[in-house]
Image (cartoon, rainbow, N blue to C red; front, side):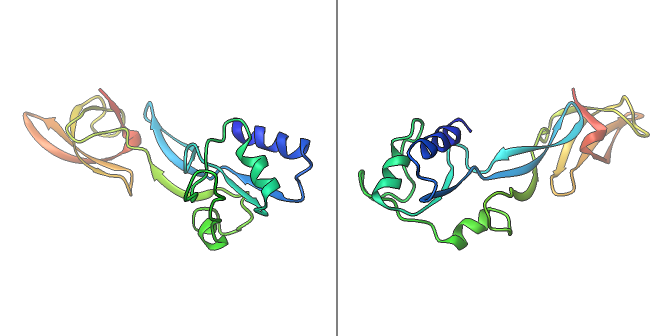
Length: 167
């Protein structure tokens, strides 16, 4: 975000608004579980990268590559050569269908907080306060299969991520 701000300030100071149009940091919504709570946060799709839509002439290329924080270009065959531009269709594959570069990519993927074999405590439901071991993880449905010891026998119980907490 700092590099994006630097580039935007540089574009204004060099009056390049007619050549450099959009600067986008591709983001996506990611569902994370922290302290047993489900929350959706925005994460960068390509950390350390930003997309710039511009006319690729010498002046705009000079403006971009000499901006503090920009170290190089993807698609540059040799140092000092202009990079190969991405096709609009390529950019739209990881940006929203809107195609204007302002919407975020709307892919949701849960961040795995649990691992198979890990000890967990059941927070709610019929087995509240029981200890168990994660046997299986279904990230698509955000469910765990937990082995819970009931009357001396281990029983497999399916639970939501939010129903258990790390031990």
